[in-house]
Image (cartoon, rainbow, N blue to C red):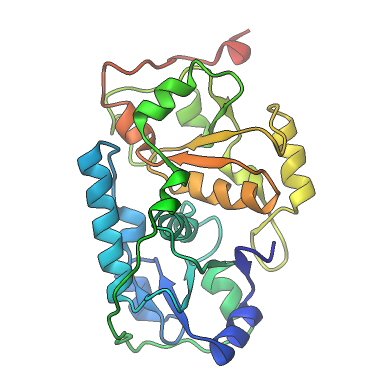
Length: 287
């Protein structure tokens, strides 16, 4: 999993041998209580709710190009994003990786295990806020291929060769809840028609060091249970693109070649009454 995930020791070595910008996605209070030395806090990586209209996508790109530039990313530095642990922030460090990828940033990594892994490795923490040197963040339009909008997702409903993969928690999948923010946060509960379901937790397993991603072979075995192989095009969604980002990292590490994400996800889809949904219990479960 060397392409995206780095260990605490990897990060320590990288910091000594090449330019690195470390990004803490946790809330400001957690950051202030102790963070990896030099890390820049960008909590908006987790909180930002996107829409996939042309205006919404333009605002998304502008918002994060500005935030990443303010953090000191110019294209020369490796960005390493982290959260508390891999399952405590709904995949928010991987959401940072996805945003960097969507903007076409050439060097983006995720700290495997988050700051918990860093502290378990007896690495230092700091309470001193970072003072990054702002840079001109480069946007490469080619990165946008990992981003699909609601029109792309709607078109995929007629393309059975594309696997629409819902990775939300079980209460959302069975249409008992509309979101992690509360059962009735969104106006409709349910699923995108034809979606397959792999709860995002299934990409990880407990270890003595805390939650970690499963091996590529284990992830491919999970995918096989819903008919996904390395050659299957996969369109991911969750509620707002955090848990799906966690799954995107897992699938990419497992060698699945074409993985994209509907970043607006259920938060956007459910608010448009013109878009179809399946509600109630999934048919297979009901039977």
